[in-house]
Image 1 (tube, rainbow, N blue to C red):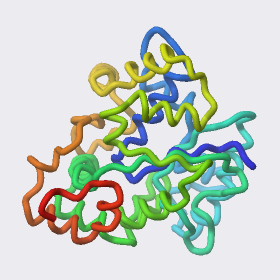
Image 2: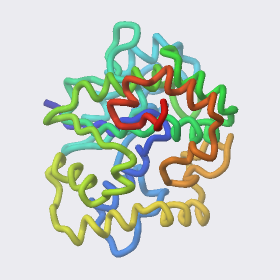
Image 3: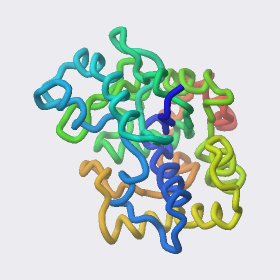
Image 4: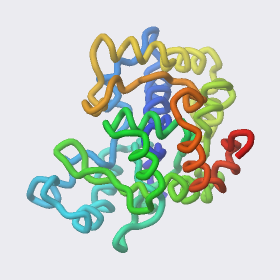
Length: 278
């Protein structure tokens, strides 16, 4: 058994929120952990430095197949850099690509998967990636969807929203915790409490309440306003946009809702995301 705890999600589904909460739980300060300090508390398997070091040339020049081949070695390097549990962000789907695992189970101890209503995800993805809503809908529907390989991140293998959700959540058990974004919003103490329990962290209620407060949406918006956030894409607006559920009711047309439901009905029903009448 390894020491990587994957913090996994489809893009724009709450991954950063969980990372901020964990940073504040670990730091246990009187003030929120600044966004610029997040890398001190978690890693990111898509950062280019390890791929570049292993390949001997810039990761942006690597093919998808070369990245896939290097990924298990990168995961081993991340694990080796830490003596205890290390939280590692990933947007890769569960499974393999070109015969190579997208997550090396030999260095894995656990995973936390955040699932969010795709009707809201599509609006955040549209803004973050600077594409129109219909393009975001099409991207989330395709099993071939991935992210760009550039100087900031290597390509990540997403697949469709449904494939991503089913792949990760079908593993749910003692080592894989699935949490809904909406439950983090509506029942933060109970839901973040499950995260704390999985990780055998302090169960001190005051400490957890403080971490929840310090990772609240208004706090994150204000920190981004003051100091910016390196994970903002530069293609849309702020990284932290609205932080609420049911944005789709104002942001999507009826035919767009229907297109998303038609493609993702099974997983939406599973997580109680189907709108009335669909």
